[in-house]
Every structure is written in C-alpha cells, then in structure tokens.
Amino acid sequence: MPAPNARGRAAAAIDPTTELADRLHSAAIHLLRRLRREDDASGLGAPQLSALSVIVFGGPITLGALARAEQVRPPTITKLIAALEQQGLVERTADLADRRVVHVSATARGARLLLEGRKRRVAALSASLARLSKRDRALLAGALPILERVTGQDAHD
Image 1 (tube, one colour):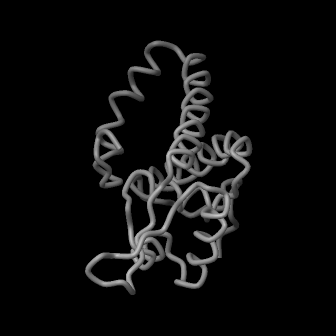
Image 2 (image 1 turned 180 degrees about the vertical axis):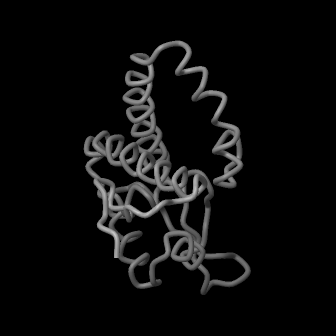
C-alpha cells in the first residue's frame, strides 16, 4: 500500500476531481477551525451554537426535527435545549394542535448572541481576505456561486 503524504492521502495517482475535493475538504476544515476560535467569546460550546444556529435561521422547530438536523438522538437534543433554555437563549412552546409536540424558538437574546458571533467570524475572515490581492479576492468571489451549488446552499443564507 502506498505511503500517505503530508496531507494523509495515498501517494498513488489521484484523479484531478478527487485531488480538488481533497484540497477543498482540507481548506474548509482549516477555515472552520480558524473561525471557530471566534466562538469562544459566546460562552457556548460548538453543539449549543450549532443547535442555536438551526433554531435562529430555521426556527421555530420541533425537538425531533432539530435532533435530525443536528444528527443526534432525541435525549441529547433535549439536554442541549434544556441548557440553552436555562440561559435564556431559547424557549419551548407546545403545539396547539398536538400538545405532545414541542416547538423551540430563539429568544431575542439567543438570536442576538448568535448574530454577534457571526459578525465576529465574518470580521475575522474579512481581515484575512483584506490581506489578499484584489485579484485573489475577485477569484474567490467568482468561485462562490460554484461552491454554493456544490453545497446546495442558497446564495444568501
């Protein structure tokens, strides 16, 4: 078996699409790790911030739908929401049609905390982008619609 190179890939020839996917994967992980440092100021852990983001941008949402979105089991999401609720960041309401169903929505404080965190991450990224040449920034801007198609993301999440 070929030895892995510095990036952990096998040294055997890799087709150009796979090589592109590998480099993009690595860059995305490094970018997210770097920006995640900005999240420390929120006082919340990554799982809480992730769930709060789903709630702020897609809520109100049921506990079951949130568990599926976060790819965790219902007891895990219940504990996570209890912690967010205790901090005044989310609130639960029973469904009027089916009292067994619980909807979770962000409080104004929760939405503000999440949006402030996003502003910090965007500011950190903006500072890094400002150090690039105008040409490199234009190249990145041109690639964004392609990346958005690859990820299935709306242009203005």
